Amino acid sequence: MTLQLEADQATLRRDLAARCPDYPRPPKVKAQLLDYQMMALFLLARDQNRPGARILEIGTGHGSSGWLLSRAAPLARITSLTTSVAERGIAERLWRKGGCRNIVVRVESSWDVLARDTDAWDLIFIDGDHNRIARDLPWFNRLREGGLLLCHDYSPQDSRSPSGIVFAELNAMAERLGRPFDVRVIDEGKVGMVGFYCGPGETVDSPPQPAQAATTRPLSSGAGLVLRREEPQTRQRALASRLGVSVSDDWTLLWPRTLFVAEGAIVPWDLVGAGLELLARWDLAAPLAPDAKLAQDLGTPDDRDRTRALVGDLRMPTYAPDLLFVRDSDAGRACLERWRIECDGSDERLAFQRALSAVKPRFCALPRIWLAAQAERDAIDRRSGARSRP
Image (cartoon, rainbow, N blue to C red; front, side, top):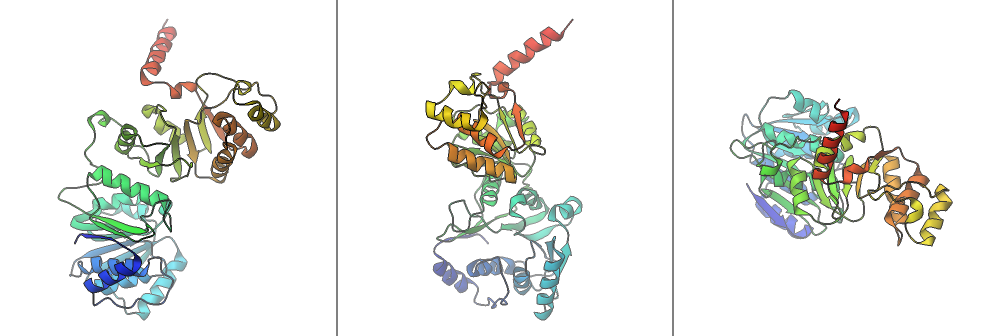
């Protein structure tokens, strides 16, 4: 069943209520889903009400969505995953009270289960750890043909209830699959839930790739690029590398590891994986400025005075935040926020220098060659190799 609805909440409730007149009144417990989203979940799960059908819920919460799944598909077998023993207890009490006999809860992370799970599923509902949704999306590969992967919290940063990582990762998945969402329910506050039905032989790990990216090594999950301006070629290459992509000029951290790319900056694709891996130890990483200018050579006199007050001597190299790797850590977030404040009418490099001095994150300085074109880096490699030969 395809479901494409975009309207205000009242209209969505009326539309969905008309489609499922048998919708039960959910229990009065804390729920993560809005009422019209619960209706949509019931409607979609009802299609799986048959013996032998299997439903997986990632993110048990207080059990309200599991209760609804059990009501919608009493003939199916339902498994709910949580990492919280307390959640399991709350949910199991609710389900016992409601007579939900076809649902069980397991206290395990979804990716641990995925690593050893070989079963086929008919419906997988994802409402777990938003920051790690990239690790849940491969569950798509466990769907039977025609099965549905349904995801909650598809909401951009400017929505009423933002969930930027989920929004970006699901958009990236749509581009990898090369098709739009089969399920898309969005309210007037840009809060949504979306889903894909699994086509014949379709997997999320085998999307059609651009020819130029055929040899690209897939990068690790939970990472993405934030572009200052839309750049189609960079977006295409990032998606081919299985990285999330977003466009923003406010330096918002959308992934546990994020690469910020300035307009016109050259992305060294062969080094991006290494840069992201550096964030396992460092809060930020950026290359030295390619023009080799010192801090004393940049900005206005006021810029230099402000910088000198924080760093002292301006006879120091500067960094180019045109290519900035940032970990989602206290120091990483604080440094981005301070940089944003310091950039108000100031030279960006000096502003970045002041942010580093004020926050003192664990910062890794990268060689300036990271900002060079591939041909230039290849030439340097050849010259270095020639010098090293006897």
